[in-house]
Amino acid sequence: IACVGVSGFGNGLFALDKHGRPLQRAISSMDFRSQAMVEAFSQTQKDHLTRHNLQTSWSGQTSSILRWMKTEKTAAYRDIAAVLFCKDWIRYCLTGVIRSDVSDISASGLYNVLEKRYDDEIFSILGIEEIGLLAGTPVISGAFDVVANSLGSGLIQADQLCTIMGTWNINISLSSTPVIPRYIRQTILYADSSQYAVIDSSATSAANLEWFLSNILRKPGDYELFNRSIADTSQENEIIFTPFICSGLANSNPGGSFHRLRNYHTDEDVLRAVAEGILFAHRYHIENIIQEGVSVNSVLATGGGSKNRN
Image (tube, rainbow, N blue to C red; front, side):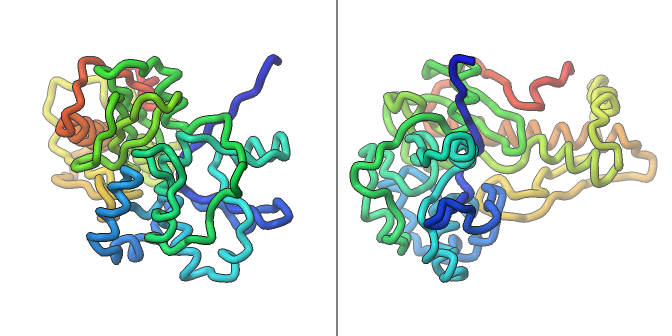
């Protein structure tokens, strides 16, 4: 073994106490506990943050969760000694060293992406001035899983787009200049920080399939049934599925639903609707990226959903 590298999902919160122990259970980027607080942000606050961090504020973001903790879990918040991301926690377990990297941090809402630096004003707007790194702390190694996945899949030039069909519905393209979000979720720094990653996303992808196979059909991992359901596309599918069991297409949580179900529909009919709902959600985000003026001439499909032979 010459080297070990670690990647992991972005945002959420992995907090350590002063002894280097987990302060609480990790909070994932799928979490909605800060939703009401984010919705209460004034438009002035949101606009000011976006001008600095090139992010839209949302509930699973590290910055939002920290603000929520300060208000709702004050004692635990005061005991935070280090804020990590998923891959940082794994690397910490392997090495005992606390580190992060610019791609994860620039997606967290805590970083001035436009000027490529930490910005006290962002922490002040969020009301979490206590959070931050000590001066001189090096920030090295690893990458936001979205960035690592895209780079490893060959996303290296501006006319490409990488779509990741996993728990989240991730769609990412590159720009040589910063894009202030109008239609998309966020702009972050790419792997070498010389390019910007333009991202639109939601928790609406293959997690819907896992949920339906496991919780509804009670057939976890039955991908042969799924393959059969999408093999024949010659007939129009009557059923419409909205893939919002984890979140909406934007910063909302409407819940998923099936429309036009009939008593003659089979498991395969419903599974095909699930697949179509996932794909149309990806299309929605890709169209948002194009609306930002980003050119897309080729698409790289990755994630668990890309392994399907159909």
